[in-house]
Amino acid sequence: MPHGHHHHHHHDAEGGDGKLAAAVGVNMLLTVAQVIGGIVSGSLAMIADALHNFSDAASLVIAAAARRIARRPADDDMTFGYARAELVAALINLTTLIVIGLYLLYEAVFRLIEPEPVTGWLIIVIAAVALAVDLATAALTWAMSKDSVNIRAAFLHNLADAMGSLAVIVAGLLIMWFDWMWVDPVATLGIAGYILWMAFTEIGGVIRILMLGSPPDLAPDHVIATAEAVPGVKGMHHAHLWQLDEHRRMLEAHIVIAAGEWGEADAIKQAVKAEIEGVHGIGHVTLEMECAGHECPHARAVGH
Image 1 (cartoon, helix red, strand yellow):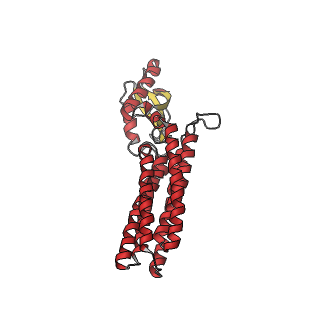
Image 2: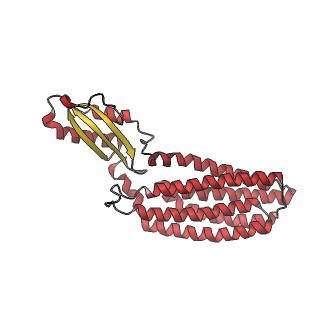
Image 3: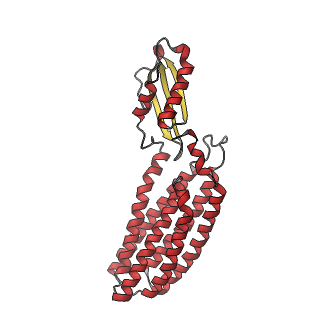
C-alpha cells in the first residue's frame, strides 16, 4: 500500500456529495410510495421494503455528513484528524441494518402464524418502480463504495433493497397466480436474512479498526521481522500496530540499536522506516531508539 494511498478516496469529493444528495432524494420519494402501496395492498414485504428504503435515505444522509466531517484537517481537539467519522457512520448504519433485519424476522414469523390478504398486482407495480430506484441509487454509490467502508455500508443498504424489491415482485406474481398468501412473509424472511448476512459481514471490520486492532492482513511478527532484518538493529519490542482508517496503517515501537552502531542510530531508524513502508505499506512509523546496553528488560514484542 503506497504512502499516498489514503488521499485517493478524497478525490472528486464534491461530486460524490452531489451523488449522495440525489440518492437521498429518490429514496425518500420511493419510501412514501412504498408505504402507501404497502398499506393499500396489505403487503408486509412491501412495508418491509419501505422501511428499509427509509433507512437507506437515513444511511445516505449519515454517510454524506461523515464524508464532510472526515475531510476536516487535524486540530487541537482531534490531532489525528476526523477520518474516523466515516467509521462511526458505518457502525451506525450497519447497526441499523441489524436492528431492521431482526424486526423484519419478527414481523414475518408473526404474519406466517396469522396470514393476512395481500393485493398482488399493486405489489408488483410499486416493487418494479422500487427496483429501478434501488438500482439507480446503488449505481450512484457503487464507485465510491470501493474505497470507503462508510459509503459501502450505505451501498449495502441499497443492494439489500434491490434484492428485497426482486423478492417482493416474485411474491406478488405468486400471490396473483396461485393465491399463496404465505409467500409474502416468506419473502420478508428472505429479505431479513440477506440484510443480516450483509451487515454482520461488514461490521466486524469496522469494530476492529475502532478498537485499534492490527490490520487483518498484516501480522505484527512479520513487521517486527522486517525491522530486525535491517543491518544495525538488534531487536524491536513494544510494537503497536493499528489502522487510523481503512487506508492508513500506523506503527509505534522501540528499536534496539546493536552494540557499536549507536553512531549510526538515526540512519538505521530511517532505514527501518523505509523498509517497513516499502514492504508493508505503513506510512506513519514512530520509533523510540534504545542502545543495546540499556534496552527495556523483559520487554514484550507486541504491546506493553
